[in-house]
Image (cartoon, rainbow over all chains, first blue to last red; front, side, top):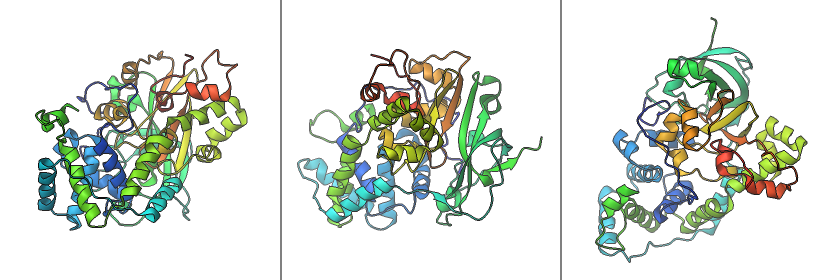
Length: 227
Length: 205
């Protein structure tokens, strides 16, 4: 989707705000949101692709005005409501309760087996490399043009890199295709390549000297450059 | 953080900010419904707050500087070479290491979200996740690096790596001049997160 998350090349977001000796989490609530997100919070996303698409579909104004963990919190809340696990009234009532009585603790539920499973899952990860029968269409050194795709759903071809000429510099085997997997339409693994595109090709006269951008792009995002 | 402060007001020292209250409400409701394991939350926070961080990446870099065979393996198959040192897992399943040289400087980013190699760098800093970094690093890398205090001559090619798939990148910085006598452990202590992302260089103290 041509969403507000797709910010590569946009202007107007200002300087980089660097914080020396930055802590991993700035606020205690960010720890809980991170932990809830990684443990599923009752509504684990079907895949990382699906999770990314849920975040992309937040209201654009909310997306832009929220911090990273505020977006994650919004995703947990929306998913729990959509799944019928929580209601808006229930959440509002609980917020009221904690506002009037800030000393009220959060209840605890211990589940050592689940804790062990999650720690193990973090160690093993979720590789996306798949074996496929079809041969790669492109080889290292091939010139390509990225397609001008504008799907309404999830995609990992950023707007700034559409319709651009580049060169294949690496082949990573076949990987789960996010554009279908995010929607529960199957993994449909495709060959994945690193494509090198010059700054000049991307930004024209405003390009900075001697710069290239590399993106990892699936085969169906690309066509041969016959020029 | 100013937004949180204004939401929170200043009349009650113990009052929580908007997202803090909302988080507390949602966590308590999900626990009551048996949908959350409190200890699992504690554990994942502990892992990324105390156990997994840029020191892992620094160890990989120091090993590569001291062992040319290891460096060769690292640049050929990052995932396996990094696993040799015991690192791997979520958000580091497919690792590629890109080498800085006198003629090439690499920098990593994720314009579409905030992909980052967790097992060797830990969780990303706020600036990496910011709209400013995500939008600008692909468009004006030299201007962005300048804001980090890094001014590279025009003769150095800048390679930006936008993590658009599940490949995760780490920069192998240049070994600082004058470091020949340092041990691997001493070298590792010099390698910063910023150098591993490519917004800084490794320097002697």
